[in-house]
Image (cartoon, rainbow over all chains, first blue to last red; front, side, top):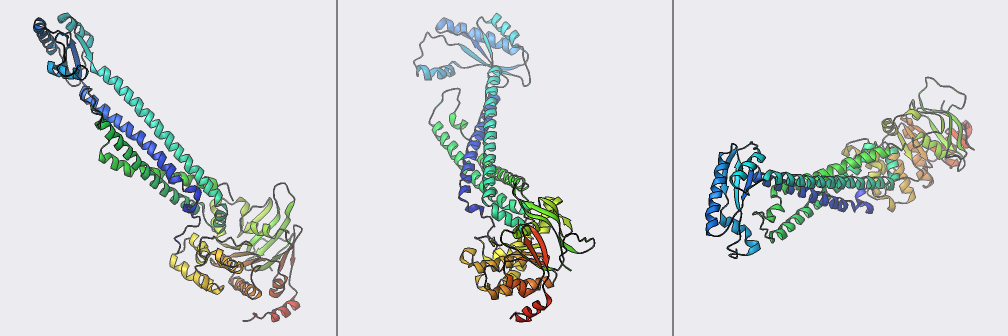
Length: 301
Length: 252
């Protein structure tokens, strides 16, 4: 006895679509959120790798005579760099590594002997130190004509700016999707109130408070939110996993960057999201339904 | 005694219902009720009669707080209903039992659940509810239909479920709109006797009816609505006595 609610909202044909609408919204929001998290962690990885580093590029040469000259220029540049206050290490990138980097374009062992390959020197700065790049460029150019200093921080800053913009867009997408989901719940609740007007009037006349009536909508909305949220998160997880698999088949030869590690989230994150996102969807649906019922009923006697 | 008609004043009395110059109109139409003034003392029993369309249901609606008057003053249990705040309505409504003309049962709930609704809404305990409701349903002759749903019940049975729902909470004010319209004479008399029993323990009863025989059988004062105006008719003692003796259930 008394297991049935007076309104039987779960029997309304018009309300059956709600979990699927919520699932679609949660799916989109979760993808946006996952994208933002992945971009964030990628930027963190890049930052860690690039923060406090410089790259110095020297004109290179091939051939016997130029090999000796290049070595001399490299030594000069390295010792000048090491004498500069704030610089911790200066390490020339081995020629073999440079050849490996060029392999994808030129093929293995196809490097023409007379192709001048520039010398790259990886420079790390002491932590927290900012050095005067203009002065460094001037003194390096004086010692080794044609030497160029690239501050990786500049690239990093631009990358971070791009990443933050992507995250901002993801945030806006999530907000819009949440608003759309709230609007769906509001309309569905109003439709339910209108459809069950007679029963609600009866409940009022025999002494039910608005909260008693709202509770039935709230329970229904909580269930729809949780169910829709769960379906949406599972679909989003499956989508990201599938993209990860597809990305795994792409070998990117850029600086050791691997796509699979970019398009994936840890299991722990998915578990937290899998609990958190449906719970948020449920609570938002519940609060929306309650607010809608209480506001709408205030207008009747 | 019970109803006090226009012009009479009552300061200290135990009025459950009090109307002063009440008018009701829907939209820009004519007034359905005009300058209605009366008072119902606690523990009184009245019939409300009048031709169809005279405004009986509108008058009852004002009393069970389904509608506010267009003008005038309505007081229930000493409270002016025109200025009541929304949260103050439910406690007042729980003191009023209503038998609606169209029953207003919830079709997907059983007879037991329908009758239990007022108790459930008031937050009564489940065991308490079940015992009371089962007893009352058997009293109204529905012990075999406790778990039946309204669509499977006859009109008479539905009406008895509606009556049981109205009285289950032992209301202070019982309003019934044609409560015997769909049941046979014996059942009708039995229901009226239930209302009398409730009246004896203090419930104020108003029964809207077309049935002249009920009015004359039960010898209770009659509020008569005609063309939007209300008059009070008291039963003639002699005739009433004769009718009471003729009532097969009297004294049973």
